[in-house]
Length: 293
Image (cartoon, rainbow, N blue to C red; front, side, top):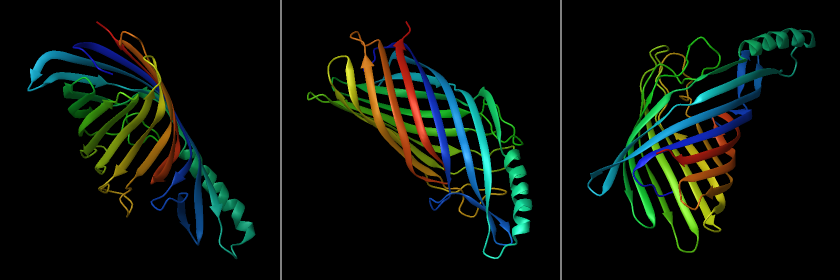
């Protein structure tokens, strides 16, 4: 959406739900508990997130682009319910199975919890280049550890006690035949979590959109995202494969934009696939955008 200099707001709601937990090979996560017994992880992760964003686009130019800044701070309601189901080898004594499963149930209860709290803030200075058919934004974002976090908690709204540097770009283009393409690509460099002494690996995150402009008000099409971790996590207790995570998502989207261009709304449902070392679920997303001044 083209923007003139001024102050803009966005507000979006995301619902994420996953019931599959996959390892680095794309199989259901299983824990070796000894004597040939494995515990398969199940349960669900459910997150409801409300995210306000403020964006200011100035009259100041740097070359051909205008300078601006945006700030985002999420509010997160997160629940993790864990189950551990014993998988017993041939010949394992039947009398021992209930005892082992009871221990697994106790461990699963200790790995289940919920929280409602503020997440980490992102601040992103940027340069905005626009013409009649396309838009390019170059940015360098910083994720500040403002979120609620305790290393002893099962679930946290914040990622940890570390900063993230996140350079990236946004590109959008519209054609006369009604097609519109957009993408936002970032690459994250994480600091060391001072609470755990673990450094999360570097990863790329791309959002993408291919829409058809049915008329001046409505757009329909496909949107999705990709997350790919390229370097391993390092530090105490990190798994041998470095917890290198990935996931992809693709699903339908519908968008509305007012005739004056000062209000827009977007709804999309994005199922994930090819997840590794993380949950695999579905994200539903409603986003509102509007001019404030």
